[in-house]
Length: 289
Image (cartoon, rainbow, N blue to C red; front, side, top):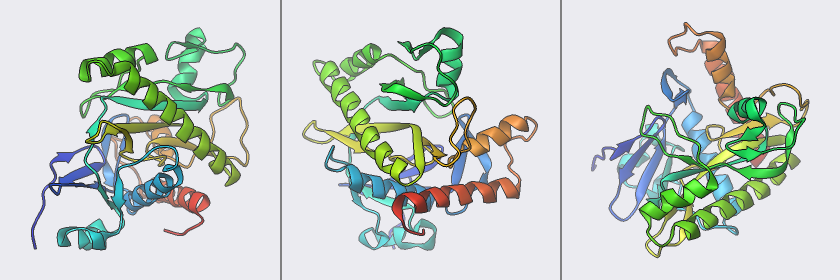
């Protein structure tokens, strides 16, 4: 059996090069505040991979995506080992854009803090009188730079995203910036509406896009997972406070309340986290993992 080693390791993902395609493995690692925690969340990688597969299929009418297969039987023998079961995605090679595409439908997190300071989120002026967790009058697009491992992403304006893309693709900055923004908002709106019908509010999320060999924009990386999004239960939703969530906000909140934890989670927090991830998966897809 041919062995493979990752060509790139992120906070959660490992990427393997097959020559004409890639394998992206979502591990059971979890990160918070740009730190990889000491604990593994068993089955988390499977939730991320299978949920992304669901959303890629759901949005392929809006924009093409990088998905080839999440069936390990379609992959080289090395990836048919138990450790990769349900966690591996075979995908097309893309040249990834050097920005993250963030979309916000509700005001929360860093956006809420910014709004409290000066009435804006990422430089976008919002109406007065909004409460924490309010639904925004209009969805807003707030791109960011992509940081190296261990660094923080930096929020940038739409105009700055044009500049970043123009440097990377001279003569195409505005074109790719507009396409990325339009696709981000269209995918979010379709998926948020569907999720609402299943009892989940998608407060915000981030997407990543790349270019295929023809220079066409393609949706890549992961899509609308609890790692890249804020999922709130619709039941009990009440603006004016932070909301319970199906995502790793639960872990972030515990870490903030336990500053001496040294990023080491107790077992009950680990169990509760994967329970929330699986509950969101089942609500959205109608399937058990």
